[in-house]
Amino acid sequence: MRIFGQQISINNDLVPDWTREEVSTGTTIMAVEYDGGVVIGADSRTTTGAYIANRVTDKLTRIHDKIYCCRSGSAADTQAIAEVVSYQLGFHSIELDEPPLVETAANLFRASCYRYREELMAGILVAGWDRRKGGQVYCVPIGGMLVRQPVAVGGSGSTYVYGFMDSNYKPGLNKDQCLELTTSALSLAMERDGSSGGVIRLASISEEGVERRVILGNQLPKFSTH
Amino acid sequence: MLGEAEPQWLSEEVKTGTTIIAIQFNGGVVLGSDSRVSAGESVVNRVMNKLSPLHDKIYCALSGSAADAQTIAEMVNYQLDVHSMEIGEDPQVRSAATLVKNISYKYKEELSAHLIVAGWDRKEGGQVFATLKGLLTRQPFAVGGSGSSYVYGFVDAEYRKGMGKKECQQFVINTLSLAMNRDGSSGGVAYLVTIDEHGTEENVILGNDLPTFFDQ
Image (cartoon, each protein chain N blue to C red):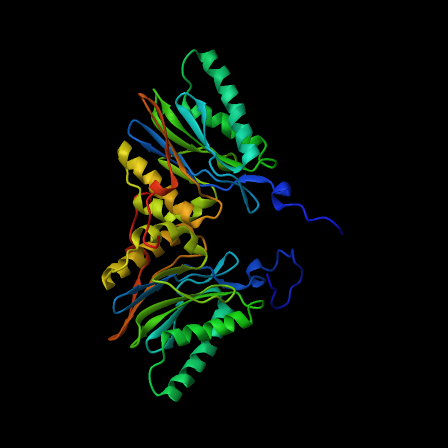
């Protein structure tokens, strides 16, 4: 753990340990493609050590009108990268005089994440809609790889829902089924992962535009073991 | 210097990477496991049966360090034999689980193995006990091993109270298959043991007979 700011001593009980911990978006994030667009979702918990710094975080960050990214890992690193990429993509789109491609945005993320891979801790899902290939999801995990996938999960909570995702995703789902799949998967992960929790933020992106919604704690789907 | 470096598997501890699961149904239990034993990057046994009998109708599922887990199972098998002779009848599942828990707790710093104990007895029917790190808790179902992380979401979503024997067997096979696909330390074939009032049934499901999912 990198240590920011002053410290009196490592073991000082007068200073709470979250002043020494890095802020991380513990997290569960997910993105699914459907015919005509994408659905993205994330939990809303940001932690510094054991303290929840923000319980209503928005981890779905706008990069362009119809391109969003889901952030996991270090909060500072991912915010900085997202700002840089938004700027680069905005400039590129003006030069092109048309809406940018999702693949371009994903490549810009990959370029930053790969070049500075030793210094950064960022796992990002890039998702959006463009006229050429429709809805697309690209995965840029820690280390700076880039791969397109029909469905992707990320963050510390994602390990718990790989099995659920593998068994419940089928190609050819429609938008509402994708929303339900994402809501269920995030809910299951939030139950098992201490670093994920709060509310579920969802967004669906298609040719018509971006539609955002929030699912509050008491509205989360319940499963029989709870 | 001269000479090649020693292969990694000679110096790495042998672990049963693993996915194990046990689930109770009305009248018995179903236990399942994968079959991979790894030493570092090498798979040293691809067909190991990790479901070990403690008594006729009580089995345990092994995970963690292969040596530790096997030793605990053998010790408890012996202690349970003596105990069942002393009481003059078949032992309770809770007794077997308590014996495992006693060893796991007493030597918790030295051992790194997690055993799930499951079986059937006349008093309480089918029961599943988890003994992780020396606790003892009865649960409707339990998962363990490195592959279990990937299927917590799946088992939370799919488990329903009151599933019958066949449904439980299918649930176990699906869970193992999903975990084996995602966990590098789990793989091979799936072993199943079904224990009920009438007896104990052991099954193997070979790799190509396991259920497949959308990306296979």
